[in-house]
Amino acid sequence: NAGVTQTPKFQVLKTGQSMTLQCAQDMNHNSMYWYRQDPGMGLRLIYYSASEGTTDKGEVPNGYNVSRLNKREFSLRLESAAPSQTSVYFCASSFGGRETQYFGPGTRLLVL
Amino acid sequence: GESVGLHLPTLSVQEGDNSIINCAYSNSASDYFIWYKQESGKGPQFIIDIRSNMDKRQGQRVTVLLNKTVKHLSLQIAATQPGDSAVYFCAEKGIQGAQKLVFGQGTRLTINP
Image 1: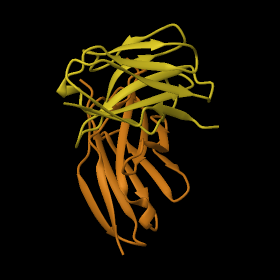
Image 2 (image 1 turned 30 degrees about the vertical axis):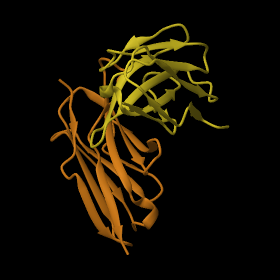
Image 3 (image 1 turned 90 degrees about the horizontal axis):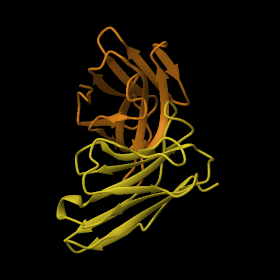
């Protein structure tokens, strides 16, 4: 049982490049989330998926898109990366919206 | 709007002492609170949670206290160990927007030998 896994662990992009961050969970959770964490700050919600087939915006959705590929996988896409998107990205999952969220190890993204 | 904050951004304690990390919240409608521990280079790890119908909950070496009157949450760690060094976040969920977990900025706990 690996919990929540994320790939890649680290990525460097040039401004304007695109990339997709992958997340998978093996806990049979219904809900999945993407957060970003900037230095000295708590986590801010980008997008979430309450259940397979649904996605909703969080606090900071601009510049991102998501896909809930199936119950296990939830990807985050940056279509045209900007330096302001340099951050650590965390994926999380939970049984439901009212339950505890479990986090992956994070993806460190640097946009030059 | 909702906000969750911490009184102390850093806390330094002696190994073996008890640690108390505090958190204030502003949304009186919040009904679920969680403490997370984040070690350097890792994702947040669930420690303990509490619902608003309780004022105290205990785990292994940790206790969470909830004072709804003053909208205050605290995490007590007994007999602090070097492995407890981390950033601790409190988070809340309100009744509205139940999917959204609102995090505080975090408190860094350092353990002196």
